[in-house]
Length: 407
Image (tube, rainbow, N blue to C red; front, top):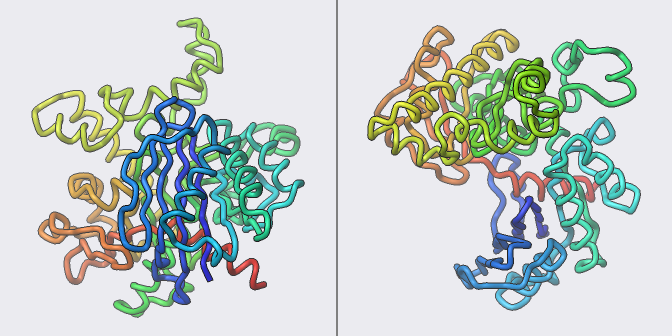
């Protein structure tokens, strides 16, 4: 049974046709898929992989909006495979589910309207997620569509972790709380790490203590106890917590008021800057960590500071989460930076010996991200394992969609 997974971003649309494995720790089989990028720019491009490899590589396409991009994707599937007639369902990544959705849900008009309403909590994400759903429902009207929410994995966090110390009417009337994001990634990676701990170290999955570091252009940490999210670094929105490519992560809540007084900036200007001009970009001018690393290797002091701040913030969260979990069995790195940057992994693990993390420098330098394989970074006998676990967010969306439809 195959699922078309649609992930609509601000100016891109990723799509893939997948067959989830019966093993929930194994990556889904990718039958094909691709990316429509630069939507709305007049220079949209298509990349598509069919069953036999790359079929379209950077072809110019007409995609003024997400509805048009979805038609481009559907046409590519029809022309180059895999067979669209075999699609059982369409799964959609939706960033914010608010307090309404603690799991996947079949999309109807009411669900779609609620996703759009929740744009107040994720203004950069939910509107384009909704646009992708609307376009896909028009193009694939005869199969069920399932929304899978980034926030759902964190929906039952303990109240002590999820609750902000703010006025009660903010919490009750405006939904102000910690929601957390990257839930599909944290769910898959923590489950896979727990299976490794059970197999290799005899740690029962229901008692496993795992900190997952999803490090990409967006980044978050998550403390997972026995498969349950008990705390996570992102909060009301995807802006909080770790330093990211263009997002600040944690800052003093008084920052907006201070900048209004001293610089005349309104709240919207501050929020925009914290989302798009901060993080690595704000520290050194580059948002791609690969560029930052190259500059740091060349002696650039701003880039070196950016990497220092980036790693320090992560270490601080790992320490806090080890306390929240009552100890640490595994530290799992995932996503683009976590899977590929030996330098970041080394910098993060430096100083974590107090938590039992003993990095093997040779293993760390040689580690390669292989779908379905857990890479061990720590020394033999390290009390807490350091792992690389390639994420499979698209496969997790497909798996959750099918599980919901199967009942």
